[in-house]
Length: 289
Image (cartoon, rainbow, N blue to C red):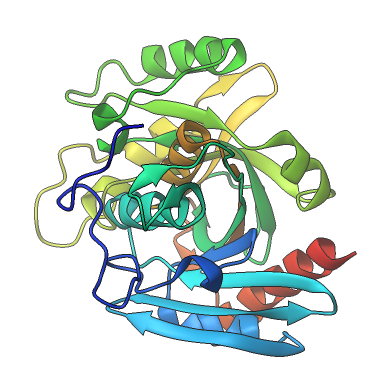
């Protein structure tokens, strides 16, 4: 079996993976990702015990137990560029033998649940909604660099999306479905919809501050798309990369979104922490029951 080079798989002197600073035994088979490193203890405060606390740069990891359920919570930072780092290194921790630098014969599939914040692009989704992403729709360039398979359902829906946005120069979206098992268990009874992932926070999400916005009506372009029962419900910066890389690497992923803003009503929640805490509790209860 081909040995991975020291340049392709960088391992620290202590045997940990390069950016995350984690050893293979440090992570559980169930991983919760959050963007904000300060949100990691907001999740792990619900653990009965914590056995691992490690961090490097924006990547903070706590692993512990709720009852007999072992869970890792890990901060990714912002954007799909960081998702590229986190998901490749999580996969390496479970599927590569660090001693021999070779891929293991028996591969492990992680359950990965994102708990993140988002803005609604539909007027009927109020702030405080906890929404599960049925699909991740990427407007970033991450998956241009990976070979990834698109299923029949994804392909037909993506064709409609590409047609809808074809007049916007330079946009080449990609689409990946949520893991159906996680969507039906963790995401049960939640609002669901297509989550759009932008490569930035300001103009790429239709915001106008000082720099001139090349697509000033981007929000209306998002909320006017409809194909059968499918519509674009919300906008953030990680979900599409999570879904696509998880699928490419053989992992299961679900994104759970705490809706803190209405992009059509120009409103932002006065109690964002309460909404995020609600999402955390919902996910943990469903993981452990």
